[in-house]
Picture 1 (cartoon, rainbow, N blue to C red):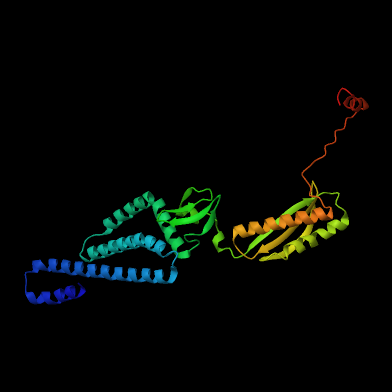
Picture 2 (cartoon, one colour; picture 1 turned 135 degrees about the horizontal axis):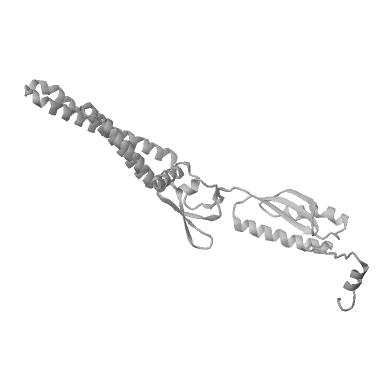
Length: 300
């Protein structure tokens, strides 16, 4: 088209046509040239989109990015076509000031009408490029959690632990904090328990060592610390922190269960008792008569 436009424009003066046809020749030339520029722009757009696909996508999010890149490509092409048309009209002598004003007002109205859709669409593109999660990841968004089943143009679908499907707008996801448990490499656990105040001091001093002796032999675990932390309302508070060198939740639960059973066995052998929540209430009366009344046989 570009070669046709140039050839036509160069050959026209040799045709010796009426001057009235000059306007038609000029119009045809700029239309062909504008159409060629639009085609070139589409090639550039496709080139950069394909380059982004090659650099940013993986096997997991390839289809997700193709799904979101399609509408984005169309939007960019529409904007490019509008720009080319305005330039061509201006070159043809058309007053585009009113047209630009109308497009500006119309664009604002259209943007307000579809702002939520555009927000979700751009959020889907951002998810595809930045990859905070992909299909198959277990994520937590606010108070919602589940496994990612599909990332669409407007919504992301999660499969909750209880079985139902959660549908969340992409814009709401990016405006929230997302916890991706699939990418967890190690799991850090902080555990507390309480022993009775009647526990002798020499046994209290042995408890941190007992905890280390219980956890250390367990595979895929590393003890960070064990401490007698504080004096609580119901007893002596102990705290220990350890790492599970594996992100699997079921493995962590098996290890924690093993630790709990082993601690119960060791504490039972040492004569150490776990505390239960309890509170002693003492009621005092100002007068001996009141105390005598409370301790009378009728009130006992």
